[in-house]
Length: 507
Image (cartoon, rainbow, N blue to C red; front, side):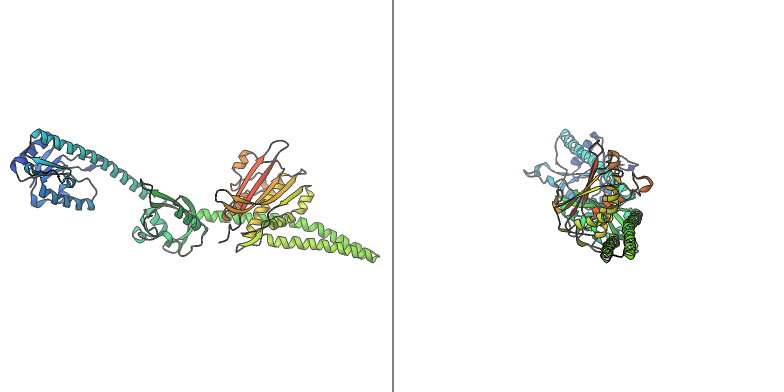
């Protein structure tokens, strides 16, 4: 039983009150008195305990427990069980044995120390003081680590982004933790998702482009950011921007993956609306170009038919009609290309990039001639690429139109080149298309904002969405779009380089 008060550690806010009690379970009276005297010398409160009444929760209120060796072994088992059930620092356990029973190999691995009694009081004080110092140093480190852990837990629970943690050492990367924001976002509780792979959010939609990025990052153990189409527990759809990061231990071994999820449904829907708006604007520009391109040959046809109808020479009539037929073929060609131009591609197909560029140049041929521009082509690559034809044609149209706009009022040159190339970062082979002009060029400030939505240098004549949409299309085709420009007098102009891999959109 306890023979006096004991001061235990309690948490008051973030301040810990130091425990200064010493629990004593020693049968020999002389040894017990020596320990009590040493405890008082160390400014500790000795408390005699009853062997039959100790429990782990009661023992945790002491800083030191000093007991006969046989009892100390049983106490160690009790404290170990309590350590598994609650957080906290167990008291330092010191075993007491008879000095005559101390052998060359002392089983001190079970305890924080062993007192061989009887011995001089000064030696007992010194030994207990050393054990106490080591135990307090450990307790301070433990308390600091515990406070940091509790802070991290509060942060995880308070952030508004969803957080999930998956065990990278287990097959299929099962989830071990999700924060409350994840539960709110998905409708699934922590208990429902523990032990599952996060693919249950996909509802079987495993062919998403973002999942390819996720799989590659998981295989390489690296960071990645991807947008996925996910489903909540109630079946509603949301777009999930997932930022995935690997966690490694001190030895560099991959142990976990941490995912940060943000619901970006509104942003994705807004960007989709912008893309549709740009397509409509492009159709309007195309319609104006077609009207101009068709008007000239139609006027020629009308004049030729008039001459053929009022002429008397059959040979002349034949020539007039032959020329009219050529003009009508030109109209038919323009009409056919314009119908294909913005016909939506539903499936990737193999097409030659040079053919796509030729169709774009044909549509703008009349405007090119009227503006006095010269087109130079150099085709070194004629192999096909797999792509969405209408989307790549839209990109090419934006590049050609921007080049012509930059050369307005000048007898400029438009240069188009194709060649085989290798993307050095991924070692992927494909086709490199270069579109260069001798226009006014762009300033460094303009280059920085070139792919920003709604940014335009054309005033009311531009939407500011053409290159923004083009960059998004190129990214989905796993390509790249680079630009360099100069405003130097006598050497101004802009060069766009479009790289598209052979199988960039072969899903």
